[in-house]
Structure formats: structure tokens, C-alpha cells
Length: 120
Length: 115
Image (tube, rainbow over all chains, first blue to last red; front, top):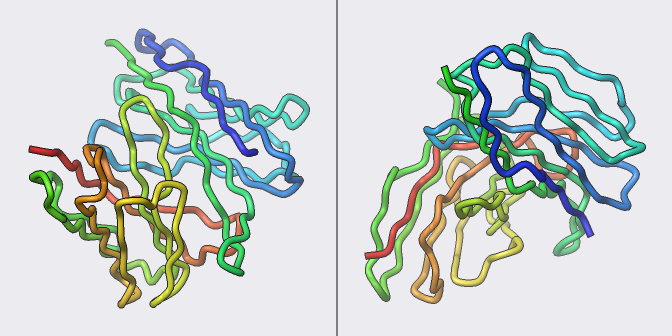
């Protein structure tokens, strides 16, 4: 079975602190993708990053960085020097092939989400 | 502007009533999806469609129905058979549904409340 666990339900930090959001996944597939999405209070999910199972290079984009470790099945997300605008719910998701109705498609399985609150 | 629109933003349902949530995209994407989000939970897939006139049940399809008559539109009907419809509903689309690397892009959501 496929599963994504975000053990941190809520995190509260003060502005300018660094914060890491954990994501652990389970799958027997060798080919899969991992995603992070941000859900601000407006509700729309905003895509942040995707990473395929064969690419364990860390990624940095401005204040955001991602650490993918296949050995521990983790895909953690770090925000450096957090800002109030970073306050949101963050979702980690796993995408794998699923056969249904005679065709295959890429199915996204989401974690429960981590609520991040950054205080001024 | 290319994107996904959902309407209405808020929807109220009376007991025994069917309601329809609208989802439209102008991204020329083939695949579209409906998800349900409950407080403290991740998103769960209701239905998906990889191409016009075709759709498949997701993990929690009971009490819901969809149609895909046009590429840009994928309306979701919440029927009276859905006993606990109060939730936030998100529509998404991707270029195709069959490849893993494609990203799903989401609309702003519709919040459904039962009166």
C-alpha cells in the first residue's frame, strides 16, 4: 500500500527562524514522483516542487530547499528565514502508476498536511 | 490568464438535494480530477477523467457523479446519497493523466455546507 506520513500536524515559529517539514512515504514501486504543495488560507493548492525517484539531488529555490533521501524514504522541506507569508498548510504527495479500468494513470496520494504558522 | 476556475466559492445544500459544483479549465489539459478535503486530512480522490467522455471512480466515489462532455469542463454532482457532504472540494487538471512527471494544478476550491 502507498502511504505518505507528515507526522507534524502543526508547527509554530517566529519570523526568521528556519523550519523543516517532514515527509515520510511508503511504496514498493521503484518509479514514482514526490511533490510538495502549499495551501494558503485562500484554499488553492500551489505546486512547489516535484522530484522523481531516481533523482536524489537536493534542490534549493530561494529560501526553500528539499532533501530527498531514498534510504529513509523521506522528502523533507526546509524554509530558511521564515516569513509570515509562509504561513499555510503544506502537503507532501506521492505519485505512482495505478491500473484502473484497463488503463494506467498517475495517482497522487497526499499526506495529512502540516499547518505552519509564522508569527511576526 | 490560463487557469482553473471553480464555482461557486460557497455552496449550501439542503437535506435530500443534489448540488453541482463547477470546474472549468483553459489550460488545454486532457486530465481532470476532483478531490475532497476534510479538516486535518489530506486530499482524497473522488473521480478523475483522462479524456473527454471518459471518467473513472477514485477512492471515495460513492454519493458523487461526474460528466466530461467537454475538454475544459468537469462538473461534480453531490447527490443525496452522500450522507456527509460537508467538505472543501478541489478540482485539478494535468496535461495528461498517464505519466508520473506531470504536475496537477488546482483550482481555488468550493466549500460545501449542509443546512
